[in-house]
Image (cartoon, rainbow, N blue to C red; front, side, top):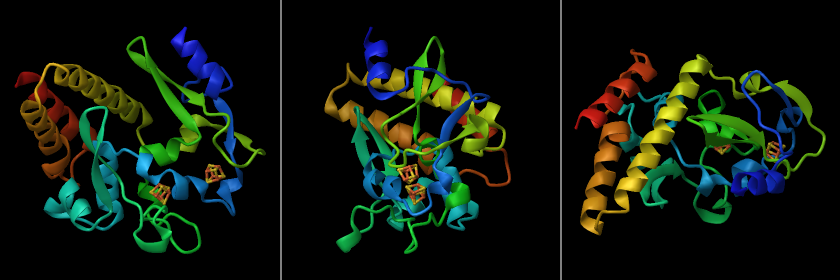
Length: 225
Ligand code: SF4
Ligand code: SF4
């Protein structure tokens, strides 16, 4: 019932897989950068996003990690449903509501490396039955005329099958940790959050190795500890 209300309220009521075609393409967003101006502080970053953004800003070696992105102010930490997670930073000063990566012409400076959330919009994900579907957030995009495009093309992610598997596993990790945190006092909750940050965000990734393999190694380490 809750799911039906949610979907009826914010979507066209349909669920999609990556091979489906949905009206998403607002002519390359020409003349509009609403998403990059108004939604920045809601864009939570997963480990793949941190890996990609690190490459996008030219980091190499031990700098494929959250720490240099934090140090340069590209991302900041926030608490979301009990979890301490990175999110995209907004610019400071008069333009404080714009993403740090939005340029003067309204384009993304790290387009090829942009986070998964930016790629998805105006799609969302709904998780159920040990999997997930995409849904269209039908009222979110400011342009009403949108052309049909296949979701896999829209996302533009190499190895989408591996990426979707990662998304599902990362979601499971977060849900399990959130559940675990309910029984923790503040001190232990802080330790768990720090462990999660260190394992999946702060320990540098190797740009020369497959991201998904490295994520899997870390996931197994978490499960075995
Ligand atoms: S990373 Fe790029 S696409 Fe995402 S909000 Fe920032 S400017 Fe927009
Ligand atoms: S509101 Fe629509 S057209 Fe505007 S930036 Fe977002 S997706 Fe593109």
